[in-house]
Image (tube, rainbow, N blue to C red; front, top):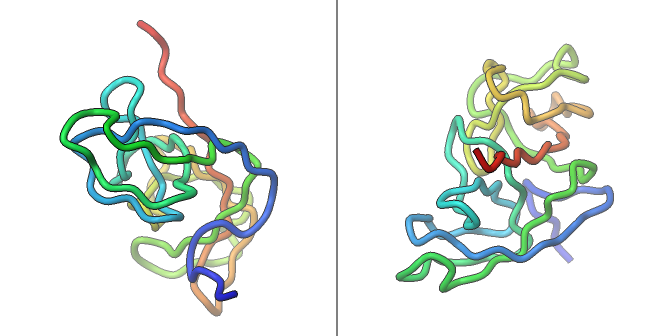
Length: 139
């Protein structure tokens, strides 16, 4: 079985099913998703807050929730992604940073700090990260 170049590597997963927002682009397995309309998820873009990682592929329906997707919301799952720009170094280990997109990490941004670096592979230029889901309050 071939391993995905980026995505899930190890650790406990906590799968939950959510409706896909009608404004979302197609979601692939391993894409980070963010909350869109309250209660719905969409494929994340640079600067979005982490909600979880898609465990299955999905397209957007014509209305919010027409399509469902299984999402890993565990803060203990470890994923491997490249930086959106630049090169990784061991100095990034145990640091927090932001998303660079659905399948990349912004190693130069620290506004949201919802990406925690467990380890790096300097040869492959990738980071092994835990994604800390961000849940919004009701107010």
